[in-house]
Amino acid sequence: MSQLCSLVLLVIFAIAVVVGRPQLNRYQHIAVIENDAWEQSLPGELRNPFYKTPRVRSALAKSSWFGPGETPVLDRQAEKISRREIYNVLSHAGLIERRKFF
Image (tube, rainbow, N blue to C red; front, side):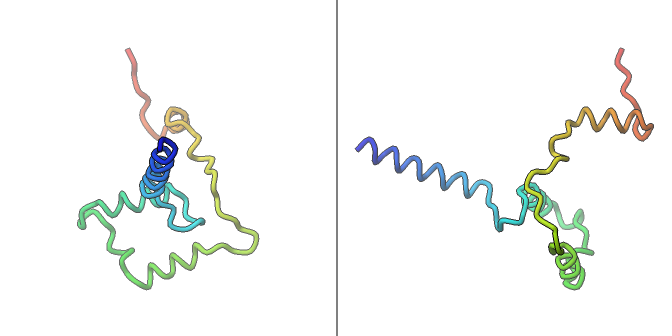
């Protein structure tokens, strides 16, 4: 009986993980899915109506198809850069004001 309970708990946990972070198709990066969900939660006045146009949506979808020799990015290098490093680069370039610590 103990093994059956363990198996049931394992299956429930696996379902919760899959439902919690759905991967709609194998080419969609999870960060894109999460960003889309966040944008959908915005009120209507903060959304850009430009992207609701069917012609624009189809053109953007077509331009994002993979061309010859292209592959999906599964391990984004940009996600590995710390915010501190980004701040340092932008502040040393003079694009943002440096923090003054006393």
